[in-house]
Every structure is written in structure tokens, then in C-alpha cells.
Length: 71
Image 1 (tube, rainbow, N blue to C red):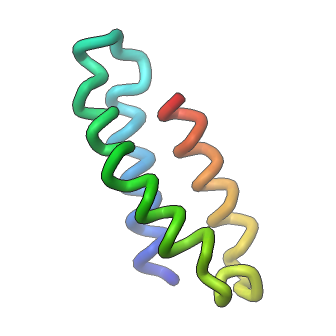
Image 2 (image 1 turned 45 degrees about the vertical axis):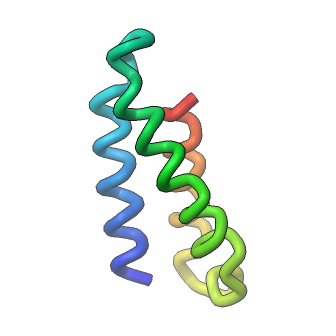
Image 3 (image 1 turned 90 degrees about the horizontal axis):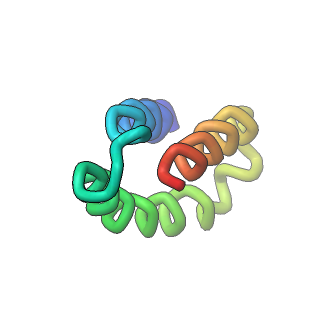
């Protein structure tokens, strides 16, 4: 779980770099979203072990922040 949280933090940092860019400058962020959001959905949100993990709330907060930044 530690590596997944580290990966999410890195993804959040990368997306923050493009957060306030306009149209054409957001293309790299859009490509990142297309690749990583399905991975987040399949490997984290659908993982049965996450719901019982003590890291559940911090991971969900981090995922929420990532989704917010991307939108």
C-alpha cells in the first residue's frame, strides 16, 4: 500500500503542474488522466483490501484531490 500512496502523491504533483494551464497546454495532463484514471479505478477503488485498510481515508482523500485537480 505504501507504494500505491507514493504513486498517488507523485501523480498529484504532476497534475498540479498543469492545473492552471489553458487548452493546448493541458494536453499532457489530459493524456496522463486517460492513462492513470482507469488504473486508479481498477487497482485501487475496486481492490477489496483497501476498504479494510487503515489507509482507506487518506487514500480516498488523495484520490479525490487528484480528481479535483484534473477537472
